[in-house]
Image (cartoon, rainbow, N blue to C red; front, side):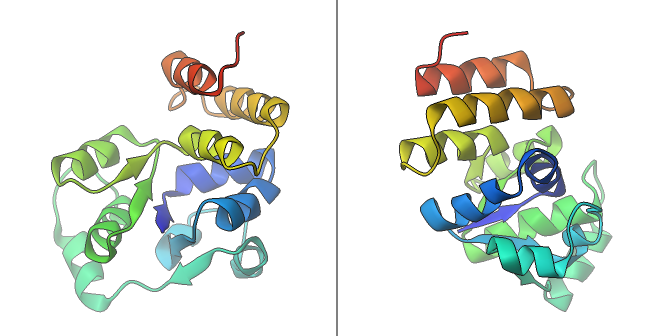
Amino acid sequence: MMILDANILIDFCKCDKTIVKLICHYIGQIYLATPVLYEINEIDEDDCREMGIILVEPELELAILAAGEKGPLSFQDKLCFLMAKQNGWTCVTNDKPLRRRCENELVPLFWGIELICILVESGGLPLEQASELILEIKKLNPKYITDIIVENAFKRLGIIK
């Protein structure tokens, strides 16, 4: 079970929304905090249902905790972290401060590109399509998807570029 940060979902939706449905089918359930959905212009609640994403309204105590915390994370990032920690979910994000917070508190993590690799490994996505998708995401989001992330994904998948 995974909770996604907005940047992951935006990248996937800009490239190919069907990837999200494949991830839910082949890898595991995706959860999305409702405040995160509200910062994403690319999809709405109906799209989430169609893709297999379960929307979760954060508990009031978590929302208050997230709103009151100081630090570099946005309110939505804090919610992703807190909900992952509370529920034992894997946090899927490309955001480095959120990744550091998860690492420091031993919350399981994936890069968005890792989900594509796992999707290939589980038989849910052809290798060629994965390669194209990874390069498309890199082009759309060069700030977060570095050359090293792409190289590691290609190495994991046995792709030589």
